[in-house]
Length: 291
DNA sequence: GACTCGTGGAC
DNA sequence: TGTCCAAGAGT
Image (cartoon, chains in turn orange, red, blue):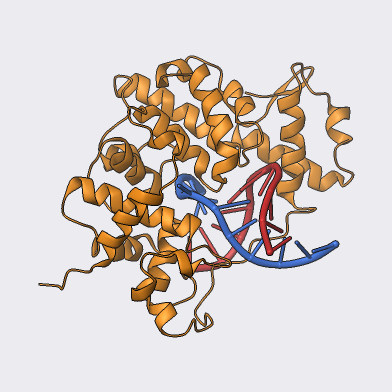
């Protein structure tokens, strides 16, 4: 039998006192809202998600409402959240939920995982935060807290779903409510206190138990996650310019207008072909439009 | 596992 | 100014 750690209780208490009042934490927030918020929060900061989420749920209060709309309207409403394929996947997920799951967001992790755009994090986040099931939920914030407090490293290495989930499971309280609060609390801790840069250890509830702090904040010497490639001038940049044009237009965008967005023709063609292949753009006789 | 995929704010 | 980073997922 392992020795129970005091860490979860400290995190749970801190979260109860200091957790932010975010929309998806309001009582009665629907599971559909949780699913939408988790899609939007994949690699997009909380502050940018909040207004788009409110608009989205007012316009499409249920999965069936979104499923009934053209997928291009989902892409347009996604606005500047980035990675617009998430909007396409969310629309497809809404169609599947409507057609195969009776319009109800699935409760169990395997069924959630079967939805497009739902991976290890999102499936568990919905099962735990919307439905109160007991699973470890590991995001980038949790991975950073575990790396520091448990492993004594300044930053987490590249993600490994199996290892990360096992590491959190080892700390997860048995009770449903405590497990929920610990999952949410350790994420929150990483988001607002144990941040990637300039962690606020003076405000941390587990500072006295943090292996990284106790070791004197040794510099990270492990394998780092892959460096993000420069955006300026990249294919993603060109795709982004084209998508912004398609979102703004309510009539087909002509070939000439596309050509005026970026001078390098081969790169422009590559970006446009990619968007067409991804289903984010559709070619009509008069030009290009959202799906 | 490495790579790709948007967008914008903070330092 | 450039770099880092943000509740990841799919290939």
